[in-house]
Length: 83
Image 1: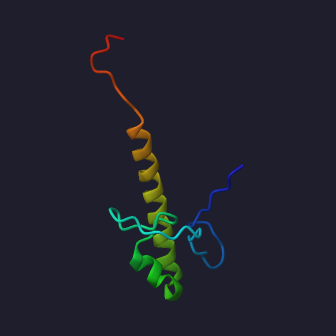
Image 2 (image 1 turned 30 degrees about the vertical axis):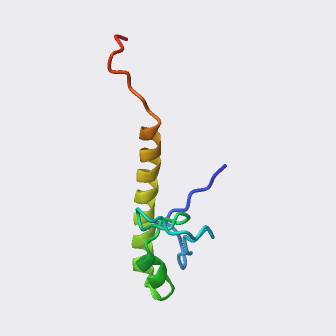
């Protein structure tokens, strides 16, 4: 069972979202592992918990968008079908 991290209810210091897959995607400008921007990665160490929470929330949005894009690219509609 996969446990999802919830930055809203998490108690204590927020962990880094880094998953040690550190490659920047040339088109999106996002890390392919954690989906952070270079600015978010650079600022993380000295960032406030509020900043970190905001980044985590944005990462959740990015991950959902990435998954939706992947799903929609696999759906093919046949406009000529009479079903």
